[in-house]
Image (cartoon, rainbow, N blue to C red; front, side, top):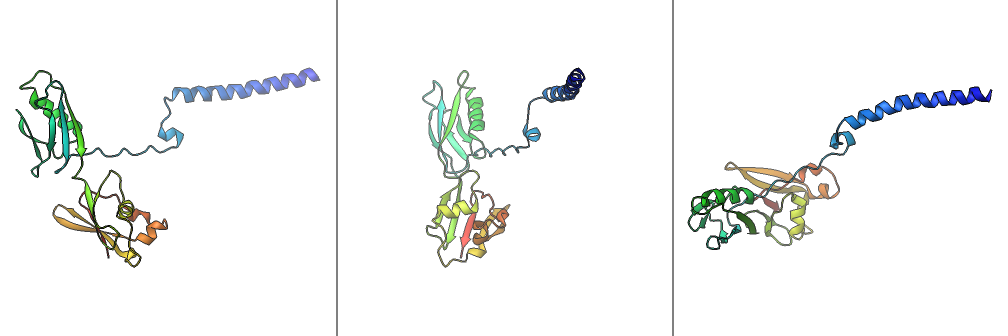
Length: 206
């Protein structure tokens, strides 16, 4: 009787193994685990910094000190570089500008190696006006929201109209307004109105 019981247990274990093993092999063959298979959403990539008017750049040409210097991006979006004259900088990322400078310098030097570093950012800023502790311009970092910028301005005054704050944005020469209810966002309600800000946006707190 004991032999029959033992044989039965062994047969059951073999059946379980025959089901489990092929499944495991299928997972291994499915390739590397990604965000979909794990159920974890991939974080969105932050947008790359784009050079703008007023920014100060450090240009380094390897072994070419006569070309290396700090430059200001002029109101026309260009910078002045010896030999290369005026070069468009606004609208490019630092990596793209380095490539453009290297291509232009290739006419005068052999195998140019250029590095562009943003020393000071003046093109990315927003404005906060009205009933805040410190109104004025606020430097805008990537991914900054309305609530964060208001906090950088010292917060709103006690008697400000927190429910009717407006964000003004110019798009293709037209003014666009976004409503913002400070009290709702602070309480975690209707957080979609806590939008990502863009350069030159204006937050109006009455």
